[in-house]
Image (cartoon, rainbow, N blue to C red):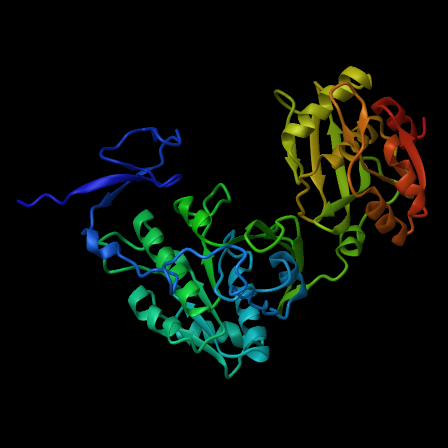
Length: 453
C-alpha cells in the first residue's frame, strides 16, 4: 500500500513542519497547522515576473509609472490612493451579505463603460444567477463578460490574452488547481491560486480583484500569506441590519491606509455618500445625556460622528461592559481615569459605548469624547448641543493634544457648532478655524465644561 507523503503548513506564517504540533515553532501561533500533501517539485515552477533578469538601478529612468484607472466611484478611488494601478492584485474581504459582490459588479460596470472590456469570474453563482443580479443592479453592459469557472487553468488563458482592462475573481476560495489534490479553499489551494493570479496580473498588466471570505473573527479566511502576497487588502465593513457600509484599506502598496470610503446600501445597489458627516448626525437626538459629537480624522478627511454612552444599574450578576466602534481597552482605561481623577463611580454599573452609524474609530483623539459621554450618562446631564469634543486622555488625567485640530474644527463649523472642548495646545488652531475653543488641561476641567457644572 502506497503512503502519500505530507507535511504541515502554518496558515499564519507559511512555515513548513514535518509533523503536526499544537503550536507553530516559527510564529508561535496555536492551532494553525494544516496538513498538506507534498507535490512534485516541478509543479511549483513559475516564470519570472520580469522580462529581463538583470538587476536595474532603482533610479533608472526606463521604469514607467502606469497611469491609474478611475473606477467611476470616487469613494473607492479615495481608498486606493487615487485609482486602480494596472497589474495590481487586490484582495477584498467582508462579512457574508455585506455587499462585496455588489461592489465588485458595480465597479466592473463602471470600468466596462469608461475604459474597456472587463472579465468577471464567478465561482459561486451560475450564469443565470449572476445575470439576474446584474439586471437588478442595472449593471448590464456589452463589454462586461461573465465567466463561470473555478479551475485556474481555464481562467488563466483569458487573463493572458490581455484583452481585458480589469478582472474580478469571486471568490478566491472557490478557485482550485488540479496540480494539488487538496479541496478548494484549503491552505495549499489558496496559496497556489493566489500566486498564479499574482503572476498573471504582473505579466499581463491587468488589475485583478480577488473577493475573499472571512472567518468568524472577521479576518480573511486562509493563510496570512494571502494578505502578504497581494498589493492591497480592502475590508468592506458595516452592520448587516444598517444601510451604511465602510470600505477600509489595511494594506496598500500604492497609497495610504488611512482613507475610508463610505457607501449606503439601497435597493438598486451601493450609493456613494459624498457627505458622511451629515449622514452620521442626521438622527442625532438633542438634549439627551450620553451623546457627544466627535470630529474624527480618516486620512485627510474629517468626519463628524456621534459617540454614545449608557451607564445603568446592573440587573444580574457582575456589571457588563459592551463596547462597539472604539477600542474596548481604551474605554477600560478611561473608566479607571474617571474613577481615580474624576471622582465618578463605574465599578458597580453596566457600561455601554457605541459609535452611531456602525463606523469604527481607532485614534486616541476620541478619548475625551468617550469620557464626556460616560460622565454625561452617569450624571444624567446632557452635553450642550453646540459643543464638539476631541482630545487624548492620559493615565494621570491630563488632556493631550491631537493632530489635525484645525481640519477638525473647520468640519465642526460647517454643521453649526460654535464651541470645541479641546486640549489647551490645540486652542490656537481651533480659533483660526472660526470656532470658540474651550481649552482643558485635565479631565476634571474638561468635565466642568462638558457638563456645565
